[in-house]
Length: 331
Image (cartoon, rainbow, N blue to C red; front, side, top):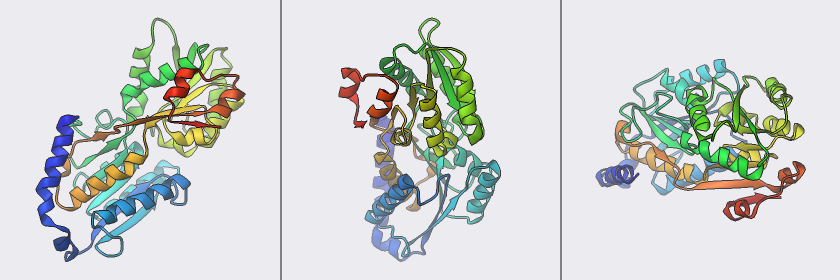
């Protein structure tokens, strides 16, 4: 991490000579954004406003020296491919995407235009970059859910629900980084002896979420759930948390949007960092930095969020160790 920070610092120093005054006289730079959630989604609208503010602090003002276009790709793979083709056809200076699903779709269309991802959780395993230190391609960005966090999710689930003996791992193989393989390997490596036992729960359409989780629950007592980072389950967070609650299954989620919608617990990189990191890399690339030399950055801080009402509904009490470590407890 020290080397990555040094590389970023050197890039900043080396490019600062261009100056904001010189930049204002140039034609407006263009950014194309491809995301999976609508712009009026509460989380999206807040992050967009923050990103615009941070870019303005760096001298990039929408409508003056910056033009930003947005594409929301909806829910199907056809929509995603169409959205990726549209942003590439715009030939912008940077394409900014949200998750691994958007990153893969855009990189299938261009290996020339710089691509900046916001939450690609396993960029090496997904083939987006050669290495975290030196991407060596046209993509780089950030992640708030490194595969190594899998071990933490298992630990947290055991701590809040010690009776858990079976863990269902929920994900869509089409939209989860590396089809879930990297995370599954780390989860299984975290098990001690024969427990917990892991079972994959693959969901590829909203109607399958409740049905597949119910199938897992029906196999016996002692079940719990771990949700992998996945744009599909993220978009359907309310369905996921409702199914877990209905079937009385304790669950750990990779984003706080789940706990905000009734989920038991989430553990992930602090989302407040994302806009700051995106703005810094957008600024660097627009000023001429080589995307191939900008290291992938991971969250520097992590946030444990617990929904106390959901815990009570499951008959679980929060141990003092979790209360002390939680950044937020929702009631």
